[in-house]
Length: 421
Ligand code: EPU
Image (cartoon, rainbow, N blue to C red; front, side, top):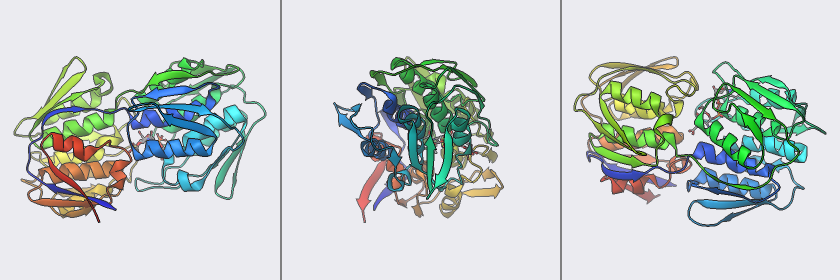
């Protein structure tokens, strides 16, 4: 297992290119199961999760071939197996998004039930309610979700849950509805840019969808879908992570391939803290004022502040001049990074889904353990600002969602090395 060894104290300086969005790429790759022709997807990030999805599609009879840097072609060669097995699903919860396409295209799907993970229990009841409303028969068998339908029929479906809508649930129902008979209306749909990007891909292969990116999505079912080419949107979470890293190290970083319209809540919070964020023609630079102001922040569904940047934000707030209050409204148990940050000298008190962060003069390097993707990114930022050496073990978590993060950081001046045990 690899570790990162970081010598803290460098200010990040320079330019970095943001990769394509993982959380867009995964459902779009799954959606190619719906197509009768070849689908070419570009600006795919080179990540472990993307490779897992490619393996899963291979298990489901697709030929996935790389056609150049960040570009793959997906062709369905054999529709005889519709079983997404536990060995791959347990590696990546996003495997659940093959459920809707398999059901719509092959009329049956057997997908291992994803378990919980380090960020909480993460049920899939809304996904199942959604496909049931389209007429699928759904049961659990041996730890698998087994869904079948002779014919899916459009319906009105409400996808609101106790923590807001569901991103991959919206993706699943939207994908299933593309080939259903008649009209489907999804109310309380997730509004994330990744849903809008998936809808753009689906429209390019012939689906009839309107309203994606708003809480009401309308899908008119069609008889069949063709192949197409699609470019994945930039990763707003990677962009936010680098902006926070720049600010935390008191550096100055210019990011390219950023959609500022996807970053409004993030830039708003960063500016409140005292980070200078300047956008210019597809690029954005982030640099920090010497004094950081404490803030209150609550994670919310898009367009609110994203849960996937909560851990990184907490690290930045460790350097602010006073008490900040960060409340997690999407994954209330997503605070595994807090106990590791305490080992580095942070002053954070947790009360239920809220972290009260009191700024300290400095963090100090320590051996810490990555527990999930975004917590790992937070620990990397903590290591960059800490005095002395930080060793982060289990960095396979970060490889799931950040393309060559140590190379990108080294190019910005960070002292970070990957070492094998
Ligand atoms: N929920 C339910 N029932 C469901 C589905 C979700 O109660 O059937 C709850 C969840 O437990 C959670 C909330 O609803 O409290 C939102 O979950 P959602 O379904 O939206 O999460 P997801 O679609 O499984 C995606 C991202 C996550 C991101 C969340 C929220 C992908 C591959 N994953 O997950 O990203 O945190 O949306 O924005 O798109 C990450 O990239 O590190 C990551 C975890």
